[in-house]
Image (tube, rainbow, N blue to C red; front, top):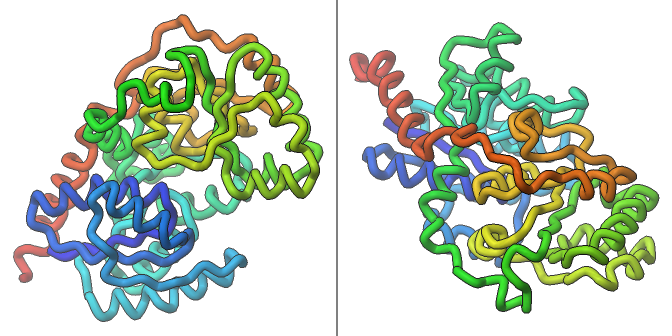
Length: 361
């Protein structure tokens, strides 16, 4: 069996680390393709080394600023790769333009498509990520959902064939690397255990609008009078703060450089709560037994909001939501499975292969 896996963004590198490990365990040949959608040489190399991921066989170096242009260029180059490698399956993760490009090309070439992290839905329906995930789900042969809500979402859209609740692949990684989280990492930042909040913020709808960003920073400044806030500031956010001359609101916030996955998880396990607009991190706080205020109008991880673990917040309601965040109530466990999602995925892939390919090869 041969699988071509397409990645392009940093969160996909993390998921690939787990998927690749399970494929190796089952002696399945994988051809890794990196589109270059999000690419910083030092950061990418650090992530690949840190998570023991094999270097991509193909690097397409496509990172145009235009979503349509980059997707089109990815499709042109991916078609060449798929034709040359002639795999049994194409695998893709999540909702990026790289995912959409892989899905469209696989479908047009009549290749079987695996969508890892299928069934997520988020408003507004015209946001690029939502368009990407909906199209990919409709073109996929095997759809692996991280939660039962994903299965229900697909069922509402009459997508039931090849759908499997496997759990979340990021939870697999979390459990696998938990032993590598540093005890007392907070001490390196002169913090005290369970006495600080972590902030991550980079979304364009939060930071590219001066009024919204100022409202958020005003609230954060107010919150920082009551609890220390640690902010690994994203380059995009830093640039907008400087562009809009909003530095005064960050005076009492502990600004640090962006940190890697292991350091962030080490810091998270001893924090009090988090404030974030990250798709992945709002889930990783749950893995760590922490609550989060999510600076988004909606989330694809609705399970955490439905269970009152996380709170959605607008820029103007941030301080109010901080005051009502309940840090004492119990967590519902195993929303995202048992940490064996990659094992379950590969079992289903092997089963599908044996049913559809093995007799003809």
